[in-house]
Image (cartoon, rainbow, N blue to C red):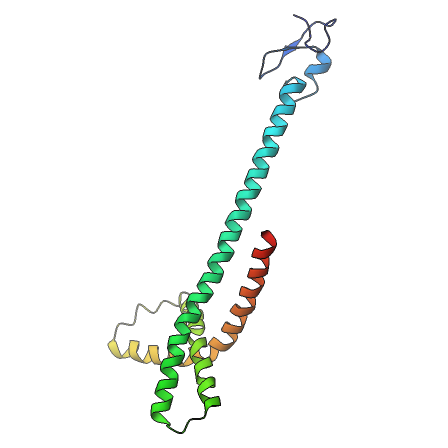
Length: 174
C-alpha cells in the first residue's frame, strides 16, 4: 500500500479514523496516527464542542444572574409588606407620627427580610434544634426580628448594589 499524500512512498501505518495509508513522515505528524483531513476534522469538532460548552456556561451564568435578581425582587416585595405592617403598628401606637418617621419605619421594614435571611444563613452554622421549648422559640424569634432590623440595612444596601452590578452583567452578556 502507498501513502495517500505521497504516492511514491510506501505506507507504514494507516489513519486510525479513515484507514488511509500513511508514510513514516505523515504517520508521525499527529498522535494518534491520523491523516491531515481527519486530524483537521477532529480539531474542528473539538472547537465546536468548546464553543458550545462556552455558550452553555454563559447561559447558565446568565440564568443564575437572573435568579439573583428575581430573589432580590421577591425579598423587596416581602419587605414592603413588613414595612406596611411596621408603619401601621407604629401609627397605632404613636398617632402623631410624622411622615418622615413613617418613611423611616417603612424603609426599616423593607430591610427586615434581608436581615432575616442573613441571620438564617448564619444560624445554619449553629444548630438550634437541641432547644425545644415553646418559650425559647418565641424569645428567639423576637431577638432575631430585632437583629434583622439592624442587620437588614447593610444587607439591603449590599444586595441592592449586587443586583445593580448583576443587571449590568446581564446587559453585557446580551
